[in-house]
Length: 245
Image 1: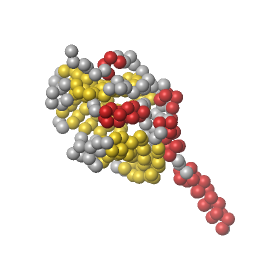
Image 2 (image 1 turned 135 degrees about the horizontal axis):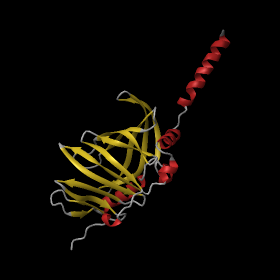
Image 3 (image 1 turned 30 degrees about the vertical axis):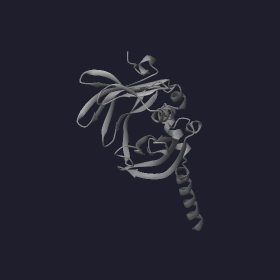
């Protein structure tokens, strides 16, 4: 009888052991594989995302472009007029003043933070070790009825008012599909300093072999992507600061 009981326990342990032994590396590898595979992710030269941002009762059409060499661009449409709202050409970061709508260069601190952020392309978890990032599996948590793996991602620290600040985001990966459905990060400046922003990611869709979340939302805004293009023609002149003539 004891031998039978021992055998049953051994079988049960053999079944549950793989789940218990799940490592953070395996979770991330599975995520990248399920969303297109590392080879396809590494082929991305640029990503263009076209969508609609809903916030404070407004709906703002926008276009966002990011490139492998670090360039970033956001174009929005206000009252029927399209304008580049912010951009980074790899060296100079700039954005429009909300009051005057004039283009203004970012200060050195913000520009250096932007340079660090470019390492996230096309996904912060792709080759994270080579980027100098660290990951940690916190454990399993049930979020809004969904079982998830909670992973802590630590990236290069950013600088705020001359002080180095840890750059940490927690991601919650669906244990069934191994894709992040929630991210949490802390606001480091402004009136909301110290507040944790929780964003949800859903409606994953395939674009030329790679999967992206087409809906991202938090308590302040909802972004719905209507179209995602990869490796399209990009006019690099658009990223440059518009010098006054």
